[in-house]
Length: 194
Image (cartoon, rainbow, N blue to C red):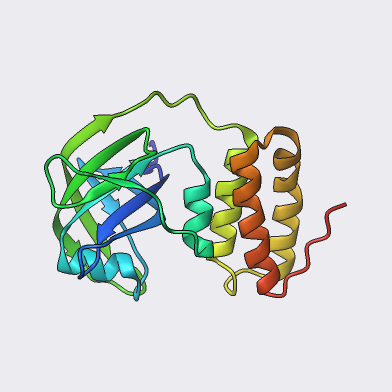
């Protein structure tokens, strides 16, 4: 019997805060039975924003600085207004999907918001990730789990990811990688680059 799996896609979810300001956060989302499942941890800004304003934007992009920036305090990215919901999408998005949240399960430690597609727009072609872009996304996931993962695991994975950075990084990837390495150093994790 075939095993049912849902693919998790690393995207940027943009919600609106109480003052109407955008909050963009990297998140793994999946699509099941026609719904996008958004599972923010509690407490979090994404959770609070979606409970109050049940609309959001899924941004698909190749500028990995946005993923790294959300975890390192570099959050100011230009936005444009959505077409069909009260919200915004990131200007550098290659495509975006506008969602209406139709229900949610308020589980701990993560809730599950079910988003129905209202609008999908493609702005530019996606030409694929190079190894450095993939390395930045993986490192961002590690940074989001500082304090949850053993330091040895973080060190080992970062050593491997450094290979992709060394071989294929451009200016944007190097900038994003630098932000993440600064955050790791702030957590008192020594990374030896051999």
